[in-house]
Length: 331
Ligand code: NAD
Ligand code: TDX
Image (cartoon, rainbow, N blue to C red; front, side, top):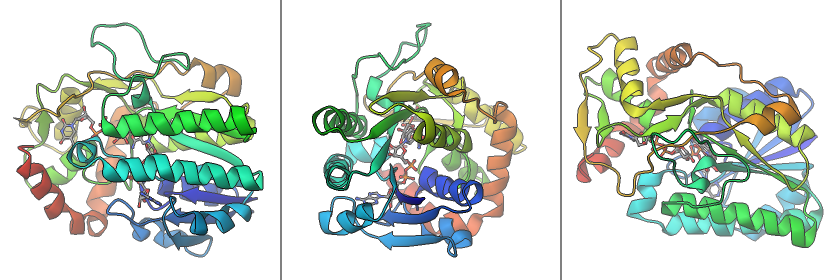
Protein backbone atom coordinates (compact mmCIF):
# COMPACT_ATOMS: atom_id res chain seq x y z
CA UNK A 1 0.00 0.00 0.00
CA UNK A 2 1.38 3.39 -1.07
CA UNK A 3 0.19 6.14 1.29
CA UNK A 4 0.60 9.86 0.56
CA UNK A 5 0.28 11.93 3.74
CA UNK A 6 0.02 15.70 3.28
CA UNK A 7 1.06 17.81 6.24
CA UNK A 8 2.97 14.85 7.71
CA UNK A 9 5.54 17.16 9.35
CA UNK A 10 2.82 18.90 11.39
CA UNK A 11 1.31 17.85 14.71
CA UNK A 12 -1.40 15.33 13.81
CA UNK A 13 0.23 14.32 10.53
CA UNK A 14 3.55 13.42 12.20
CA UNK A 15 1.73 11.32 14.78
CA UNK A 16 -0.18 9.67 11.92
CA UNK A 17 3.09 8.89 10.12
CA UNK A 18 4.51 7.27 13.28
CA UNK A 19 1.38 5.19 13.78
CA UNK A 20 1.29 4.14 10.12
CA UNK A 21 4.91 3.04 10.12
CA UNK A 22 4.34 1.05 13.34
CA UNK A 23 1.00 -0.54 12.43
CA UNK A 24 1.48 -1.12 8.67
CA UNK A 25 4.96 -2.55 8.18
CA UNK A 26 4.39 -2.98 4.43
CA UNK A 27 3.13 0.55 3.80
CA UNK A 28 5.24 2.80 1.57
CA UNK A 29 4.85 6.24 3.11
CA UNK A 30 5.42 9.56 1.35
CA UNK A 31 4.92 12.88 3.12
CA UNK A 32 4.18 16.05 1.13
CA UNK A 33 4.75 19.10 3.32
CA UNK A 34 5.59 22.74 2.62
CA UNK A 35 7.47 22.94 5.93
CA UNK A 36 5.83 26.19 6.95
CA UNK A 37 6.50 27.56 10.46
CA UNK A 38 4.25 24.66 11.67
CA UNK A 39 6.07 21.86 9.85
CA UNK A 40 9.16 20.39 11.48
CA UNK A 41 11.23 17.64 9.82
CA UNK A 42 12.60 16.81 13.29
CA UNK A 43 9.17 15.32 14.05
CA UNK A 44 9.99 12.58 11.51
CA UNK A 45 13.67 12.15 12.41
CA UNK A 46 13.24 8.65 13.85
CA UNK A 47 11.36 7.27 10.82
CA UNK A 48 13.47 8.61 7.94
CA UNK A 49 14.31 5.04 6.83
CA UNK A 50 10.61 4.32 6.24
CA UNK A 51 9.35 7.71 4.99
CA UNK A 52 10.08 9.83 1.92
CA UNK A 53 9.66 13.52 2.80
CA UNK A 54 8.91 15.75 -0.19
CA UNK A 55 9.05 19.48 0.50
CA UNK A 56 6.35 21.11 -1.60
CA UNK A 57 3.04 22.97 -1.69
CA UNK A 58 -0.30 21.16 -1.98
CA UNK A 59 -1.52 24.07 -4.10
CA UNK A 60 1.16 23.35 -6.74
CA UNK A 61 -0.40 20.96 -9.27
CA UNK A 62 2.98 20.07 -10.81
CA UNK A 63 4.22 18.78 -7.45
CA UNK A 64 0.95 17.13 -6.44
CA UNK A 65 0.08 15.27 -9.66
CA UNK A 66 2.93 12.72 -9.86
CA UNK A 67 2.79 12.04 -6.12
CA UNK A 68 -0.93 11.32 -6.25
CA UNK A 69 -0.55 9.22 -9.42
CA UNK A 70 1.92 6.98 -7.58
CA UNK A 71 -0.31 6.47 -4.50
CA UNK A 72 -3.08 4.09 -3.45
CA UNK A 73 -4.50 6.44 -0.81
CA UNK A 74 -4.08 10.14 -0.02
CA UNK A 75 -4.61 11.26 3.59
CA UNK A 76 -4.90 15.05 3.62
CA UNK A 77 -3.80 16.74 6.87
CA UNK A 78 -1.97 19.79 5.45
CA UNK A 79 -3.58 23.07 6.43
CA UNK A 80 -3.08 26.42 8.00
CA UNK A 81 -4.50 25.38 11.36
CA UNK A 82 -4.41 28.20 13.93
CA UNK A 83 -7.47 30.40 14.50
CA UNK A 84 -5.47 33.31 15.97
CA UNK A 85 -3.21 33.44 12.89
CA UNK A 86 -6.25 33.43 10.63
CA UNK A 87 -7.48 36.60 12.34
CA UNK A 88 -4.15 38.36 11.68
CA UNK A 89 -3.72 37.22 8.06
CA UNK A 90 -6.37 35.05 6.40
CA UNK A 91 -4.58 34.88 3.05
CA UNK A 92 -2.56 31.62 3.46
CA UNK A 93 -5.70 29.97 4.89
CA UNK A 94 -7.54 30.61 1.63
CA UNK A 95 -4.62 29.46 -0.51
CA UNK A 96 -3.71 26.31 1.43
CA UNK A 97 -7.05 25.16 2.79
CA UNK A 98 -9.15 25.92 -0.29
CA UNK A 99 -6.85 25.98 -3.35
CA UNK A 100 -4.65 23.25 -1.85
CA UNK A 101 -7.63 20.94 -1.30
CA UNK A 102 -8.96 21.74 -4.78
CA UNK A 103 -5.56 20.83 -6.28
CA UNK A 104 -5.51 17.48 -4.45
CA UNK A 105 -9.09 16.70 -5.46
CA UNK A 106 -8.34 17.33 -9.12
CA UNK A 107 -5.36 14.97 -8.90
CA UNK A 108 -7.27 12.15 -7.17
CA UNK A 109 -10.05 12.60 -9.75
CA UNK A 110 -7.57 12.28 -12.65
CA UNK A 111 -5.88 9.21 -11.22
CA UNK A 112 -8.78 7.46 -9.46
CA UNK A 113 -7.06 7.45 -6.06
CA UNK A 114 -8.81 6.92 -2.69
CA UNK A 115 -8.85 10.16 -0.66
CA UNK A 116 -9.44 10.88 3.02
CA UNK A 117 -10.04 14.47 4.10
CA UNK A 118 -9.10 15.60 7.61
CA UNK A 119 -11.30 18.35 8.99
CA UNK A 120 -12.49 19.93 12.20
CA UNK A 121 -15.61 20.21 14.33
CA UNK A 122 -15.24 24.00 14.04
CA UNK A 123 -17.07 23.87 10.69
CA UNK A 124 -20.29 23.55 12.74
CA UNK A 125 -19.75 26.84 14.60
CA UNK A 126 -20.27 26.77 18.34
CA UNK A 127 -22.78 25.67 20.99
CA UNK A 128 -24.05 27.55 24.02
CA UNK A 129 -22.36 26.60 27.30
CA UNK A 130 -25.64 25.40 28.83
CA UNK A 131 -26.94 23.62 25.68
CA UNK A 132 -27.14 19.82 26.16
CA UNK A 133 -26.73 19.36 22.36
CA UNK A 134 -23.61 18.05 20.64
CA UNK A 135 -22.55 18.23 16.99
CA UNK A 136 -23.67 15.33 14.77
CA UNK A 137 -23.04 14.56 11.09
CA UNK A 138 -26.36 16.33 10.40
CA UNK A 139 -25.52 19.64 12.12
CA UNK A 140 -25.61 22.52 9.58
CA UNK A 141 -22.31 24.22 8.74
CA UNK A 142 -21.91 27.59 10.47
CA UNK A 143 -18.18 28.43 10.77
CA UNK A 144 -17.00 31.52 12.67
CA UNK A 145 -13.37 32.31 11.82
CA UNK A 146 -11.34 32.59 8.60
CA UNK A 147 -9.71 29.28 9.63
CA UNK A 148 -12.95 27.38 10.17
CA UNK A 149 -14.66 28.90 7.12
CA UNK A 150 -11.84 27.77 4.83
CA UNK A 151 -11.98 24.28 6.40
CA UNK A 152 -15.76 24.26 5.85
CA UNK A 153 -15.24 25.32 2.22
CA UNK A 154 -12.72 22.52 1.72
CA UNK A 155 -15.19 19.95 3.11
CA UNK A 156 -17.83 21.19 0.67
CA UNK A 157 -15.41 20.84 -2.24
CA UNK A 158 -14.86 17.19 -1.24
CA UNK A 159 -18.62 16.54 -1.09
CA UNK A 160 -19.08 18.11 -4.54
CA UNK A 161 -16.20 16.09 -6.04
CA UNK A 162 -17.80 12.90 -4.67
CA UNK A 163 -21.22 13.68 -6.07
CA UNK A 164 -20.22 15.30 -9.38
CA UNK A 165 -17.17 13.24 -10.33
CA UNK A 166 -17.49 10.03 -8.31
CA UNK A 167 -14.27 10.64 -6.38
CA UNK A 168 -13.82 7.94 -3.73
CA UNK A 169 -13.52 10.09 -0.62
CA UNK A 170 -14.39 10.16 3.07
CA UNK A 171 -14.31 13.11 5.48
CA UNK A 172 -13.67 13.22 9.22
CA UNK A 173 -14.34 16.18 11.51
CA UNK A 174 -12.47 15.89 14.78
CA UNK A 175 -12.47 17.85 18.02
CA UNK A 176 -9.43 19.44 19.73
CA UNK A 177 -6.36 17.19 19.76
CA UNK A 178 -3.58 17.09 22.34
CA UNK A 179 -0.36 15.07 22.58
CA UNK A 180 3.27 15.12 21.43
CA UNK A 181 4.58 17.25 18.52
CA UNK A 182 1.84 19.94 18.83
CA UNK A 183 3.07 23.42 17.92
CA UNK A 184 3.59 25.61 20.99
CA UNK A 185 1.30 28.33 19.64
CA UNK A 186 -1.63 26.05 20.62
CA UNK A 187 -3.31 26.22 24.03
CA UNK A 188 -1.99 23.17 25.93
CA UNK A 189 1.67 23.19 24.77
CA UNK A 190 1.81 26.98 25.15
CA UNK A 191 0.91 26.69 28.84
CA UNK A 192 3.24 23.73 29.49
CA UNK A 193 6.21 25.52 27.90
CA UNK A 194 5.31 28.78 29.68
CA UNK A 195 5.50 26.96 33.01
CA UNK A 196 8.82 25.35 32.07
CA UNK A 197 10.00 28.94 31.47
CA UNK A 198 8.60 30.19 34.78
CA UNK A 199 5.81 32.18 33.07
CA UNK A 200 2.19 32.05 34.27
CA UNK A 201 -0.36 30.38 31.93
CA UNK A 202 -2.56 32.75 29.88
CA UNK A 203 -6.30 32.28 29.69
CA UNK A 204 -8.27 34.11 27.01
CA UNK A 205 -11.15 36.06 28.56
CA UNK A 206 -12.85 34.38 31.51
CA UNK A 207 -11.65 30.90 30.48
CA UNK A 208 -15.19 29.50 30.32
CA UNK A 209 -14.94 28.32 26.69
CA UNK A 210 -15.31 24.56 26.34
CA UNK A 211 -13.27 22.29 24.05
CA UNK A 212 -13.82 18.53 23.57
CA UNK A 213 -10.29 17.09 24.02
CA UNK A 214 -9.10 13.91 22.30
CA UNK A 215 -5.64 12.35 22.35
CA UNK A 216 -4.03 12.60 18.92
CA UNK A 217 -3.49 8.82 18.80
CA UNK A 218 -7.21 8.21 19.22
CA UNK A 219 -7.90 10.64 16.37
CA UNK A 220 -5.50 8.74 14.15
CA UNK A 221 -6.82 5.25 14.94
CA UNK A 222 -10.25 6.58 13.95
CA UNK A 223 -8.84 7.94 10.68
CA UNK A 224 -7.38 4.54 9.76
CA UNK A 225 -10.68 2.86 10.67
CA UNK A 226 -12.56 5.25 8.35
CA UNK A 227 -10.05 4.73 5.50
CA UNK A 228 -10.45 0.96 5.80
CA UNK A 229 -14.14 0.61 6.61
CA UNK A 230 -15.85 3.98 6.02
CA UNK A 231 -18.49 4.44 3.32
CA UNK A 232 -17.50 6.58 0.33
CA UNK A 233 -18.93 10.07 0.42
CA UNK A 234 -19.69 9.90 4.14
CA UNK A 235 -18.65 12.16 6.97
CA UNK A 236 -17.63 10.78 10.38
CA UNK A 237 -17.31 12.90 13.50
CA UNK A 238 -14.37 11.99 15.76
CA UNK A 239 -14.44 12.83 19.46
CA UNK A 240 -13.82 11.06 22.76
CA UNK A 241 -16.31 12.70 25.18
CA UNK A 242 -13.60 14.99 26.57
CA UNK A 243 -15.44 18.29 27.22
CA UNK A 244 -13.60 20.66 29.57
CA UNK A 245 -13.48 24.41 29.93
CA UNK A 246 -10.16 26.18 29.46
CA UNK A 247 -9.92 27.14 33.13
CA UNK A 248 -10.17 23.48 34.18
CA UNK A 249 -7.43 22.53 31.73
CA UNK A 250 -5.07 25.28 32.92
CA UNK A 251 -5.71 24.36 36.57
CA UNK A 252 -4.89 20.72 35.84
CA UNK A 253 -1.67 21.62 33.98
CA UNK A 254 -0.62 23.83 36.92
CA UNK A 255 -1.36 21.06 39.43
CA UNK A 256 0.45 18.36 37.40
CA UNK A 257 3.49 20.63 37.07
CA UNK A 258 3.62 21.26 40.81
CA UNK A 259 2.18 24.79 40.97
CA UNK A 260 -0.74 26.51 42.68
CA UNK A 261 -3.71 25.66 40.36
CA UNK A 262 -4.91 29.29 40.52
CA UNK A 263 -1.64 30.90 39.49
CA UNK A 264 -2.67 31.90 35.94
CA UNK A 265 -3.40 35.20 34.16
CA UNK A 266 -6.43 36.39 32.22
CA UNK A 267 -5.44 38.02 28.92
CA UNK A 268 -7.32 39.61 26.00
CA UNK A 269 -10.05 37.38 24.58
CA UNK A 270 -9.96 36.06 20.99
CA UNK A 271 -12.27 38.10 18.73
CA UNK A 272 -15.32 35.99 17.79
CA UNK A 273 -14.16 33.27 20.23
CA UNK A 274 -16.29 30.12 19.79
CA UNK A 275 -17.93 29.22 23.10
CA UNK A 276 -18.19 25.46 23.05
CA UNK A 277 -17.54 22.44 20.82
CA UNK A 278 -18.92 18.97 21.60
CA UNK A 279 -18.94 15.82 19.46
CA UNK A 280 -21.56 13.08 19.33
CA UNK A 281 -19.44 10.11 18.18
CA UNK A 282 -22.32 7.60 17.84
CA UNK A 283 -21.79 6.93 14.13
CA UNK A 284 -18.09 6.21 14.52
CA UNK A 285 -18.69 3.86 17.46
CA UNK A 286 -21.74 2.05 16.06
CA UNK A 287 -20.88 1.79 12.36
CA UNK A 288 -17.14 1.28 12.63
CA UNK A 289 -16.76 -0.12 16.15
CA UNK A 290 -14.15 2.51 17.12
CA UNK A 291 -13.36 3.16 20.80
CA UNK A 292 -10.90 5.68 22.23
CA UNK A 293 -7.95 4.21 24.16
CA UNK A 294 -6.93 7.40 26.02
CA UNK A 295 -9.98 7.78 28.24
CA UNK A 296 -8.12 9.40 31.16
CA UNK A 297 -7.35 13.04 30.29
CA UNK A 298 -5.24 13.48 33.42
CA UNK A 299 -2.79 10.73 32.52
CA UNK A 300 -2.77 11.75 28.81
CA UNK A 301 -1.88 15.26 29.93
CA UNK A 302 0.82 13.95 32.28
CA UNK A 303 2.44 12.08 29.37
CA UNK A 304 2.20 15.21 27.20
CA UNK A 305 3.86 17.35 29.89
CA UNK A 306 6.65 14.76 30.16
CA UNK A 307 7.10 14.83 26.37
CA UNK A 308 7.59 18.63 26.32
CA UNK A 309 9.98 18.40 29.28
CA UNK A 310 12.00 15.69 27.50
CA UNK A 311 11.99 17.36 24.09
CA UNK A 312 12.92 20.96 24.76
CA UNK A 313 15.26 21.04 21.74
CA UNK A 314 12.21 20.35 19.54
CA UNK A 315 10.23 23.42 20.69
CA UNK A 316 12.77 25.85 22.13
CA UNK A 317 13.76 27.48 18.79
CA UNK A 318 10.13 28.67 18.30
CA UNK A 319 9.28 29.88 21.80
CA UNK A 320 10.54 33.49 21.77
CA UNK A 321 8.90 34.35 18.44
CA UNK A 322 5.56 32.76 19.43
CA UNK A 323 5.43 34.70 22.70
CA UNK A 324 6.48 37.97 21.01
CA UNK A 325 3.57 37.55 18.58
CA UNK A 326 1.09 36.93 21.42
CA UNK A 327 2.47 39.83 23.48
CA UNK A 328 1.89 42.18 20.54
CA UNK A 329 -1.81 41.30 20.61
CA UNK A 330 -2.18 41.51 24.39
CA UNK A 331 -2.27 37.73 24.84
P1 NAD B 1 -0.29 21.86 12.05
O1 NAD B 1 -0.40 23.33 11.81
O2 NAD B 1 0.46 21.37 13.24
O3 NAD B 1 0.38 21.17 10.77
C1 NAD B 1 0.06 21.53 9.45
C2 NAD B 1 1.11 20.96 8.51
O4 NAD B 1 0.72 21.28 7.16
C3 NAD B 1 2.51 21.53 8.73
O5 NAD B 1 3.47 20.50 8.67
C4 NAD B 1 2.69 22.49 7.55
O6 NAD B 1 4.03 22.66 7.15
C5 NAD B 1 1.86 21.82 6.47
N1 NAD B 1 1.40 22.75 5.43
C6 NAD B 1 0.81 23.96 5.63
N2 NAD B 1 0.54 24.53 4.44
C7 NAD B 1 0.93 23.65 3.48
C8 NAD B 1 0.91 23.66 2.06
N3 NAD B 1 0.40 24.70 1.37
N4 NAD B 1 1.38 22.58 1.41
C9 NAD B 1 1.90 21.52 2.08
N5 NAD B 1 1.96 21.47 3.42
C10 NAD B 1 1.48 22.52 4.11
O7 NAD B 1 -1.77 21.32 12.04
P2 NAD B 1 -2.45 20.10 12.84
O8 NAD B 1 -2.92 20.61 14.14
O9 NAD B 1 -1.57 18.92 12.77
O10 NAD B 1 -3.75 19.86 11.94
C11 NAD B 1 -3.71 18.92 10.87
C12 NAD B 1 -5.09 18.84 10.24
O11 NAD B 1 -6.05 18.44 11.22
C13 NAD B 1 -5.61 20.18 9.69
O12 NAD B 1 -6.29 19.91 8.49
C14 NAD B 1 -6.55 20.68 10.77
O13 NAD B 1 -7.55 21.50 10.21
C15 NAD B 1 -7.12 19.37 11.28
N6 NAD B 1 -7.60 19.36 12.66
C16 NAD B 1 -6.79 19.76 13.68
C17 NAD B 1 -7.24 19.68 15.00
C18 NAD B 1 -6.37 20.07 16.17
O14 NAD B 1 -6.83 20.04 17.31
N7 NAD B 1 -5.10 20.42 15.97
C19 NAD B 1 -8.54 19.22 15.26
C20 NAD B 1 -9.35 18.82 14.19
C21 NAD B 1 -8.86 18.89 12.90
O1 TDX C 1 -2.93 31.00 25.18
C1 TDX C 1 -4.07 30.60 24.94
N1 TDX C 1 -5.04 30.77 25.89
C2 TDX C 1 -6.33 30.36 25.71
O2 TDX C 1 -7.17 30.53 26.60
C3 TDX C 1 -4.42 29.94 23.70
C4 TDX C 1 -3.38 29.75 22.62
C5 TDX C 1 -5.72 29.52 23.53
N2 TDX C 1 -6.66 29.72 24.50
C6 TDX C 1 -8.03 29.18 24.32
C7 TDX C 1 -8.69 29.43 22.98
C8 TDX C 1 -9.58 28.20 22.83
O3 TDX C 1 -10.79 28.39 23.53
O4 TDX C 1 -7.89 27.75 24.41
C9 TDX C 1 -8.79 27.09 23.51
C10 TDX C 1 -7.99 26.23 22.54
O5 TDX C 1 -7.26 27.11 21.69
P1 TDX C 1 -6.38 26.58 20.46
O6 TDX C 1 -5.36 25.62 20.95
O7 TDX C 1 -5.92 27.77 19.69
O8 TDX C 1 -7.44 25.70 19.66
P2 TDX C 1 -8.84 26.03 18.92
O9 TDX C 1 -8.93 27.44 18.51
O10 TDX C 1 -9.93 25.45 19.79
O11 TDX C 1 -8.64 25.14 17.59
C11 TDX C 1 -8.01 23.83 17.64
O12 TDX C 1 -8.97 22.80 17.60
C12 TDX C 1 -9.68 22.65 16.40
C13 TDX C 1 -7.02 23.66 16.51
O13 TDX C 1 -6.04 24.69 16.56
C14 TDX C 1 -7.71 23.64 15.18
O14 TDX C 1 -6.79 23.39 14.13
C15 TDX C 1 -8.76 22.56 15.21
O15 TDX C 1 -9.50 22.61 14.03
